[in-house]
Image (tube, rainbow over the protein chains, first blue to last red):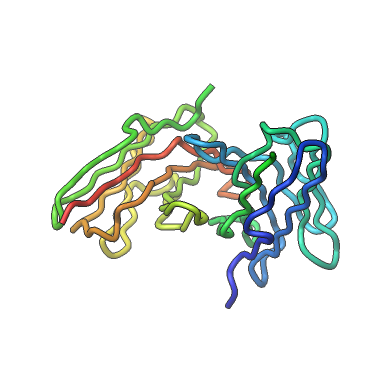
Length: 112
Length: 113
């Protein structure tokens, strides 16, 4: 029973490029959450999605960031025109709707 | 506004002794609480949770206590083992866990052999 999968595990981008982070939830889970962890900080909520719907995007920066969870395929977190301040670990979690969220291994984004 | 606080950035205990990690919250809407363990360069691993209708939940060496009136929860690890050395995050959610998790900043636990 595979857990939450994220890829890539490491991503290096130059300022101004686009970053695409992918997340496949656990089997049977239809709820996906994205969190970001800056150095020396806890995890901060970004966005909560169900299939084809954004439920809560209150933690998403207003510009350059978007997320989707299509009917088929993984959830995608997209960051356009990356800046150095976007360098962080991005974690995806999934749940069946209530209860525990299970996390993936994360994608570590480095912006040069 | 930090809704979930872990006031001890670090804790060091001897192997075999009890580790007690503390967490305070301010939002009365939180009704589901979780503890996660995290190693460097890995994702958080779920340890144990508790609903606000309970005041204690136990799973093996791990016990979580919830004091709703004080808005305080704690994680007890007995006996502590060197492999428990990691950063522990407290998290809280509303609506039975269906909403976003709000995390504390973590406590780094070191268990010395």
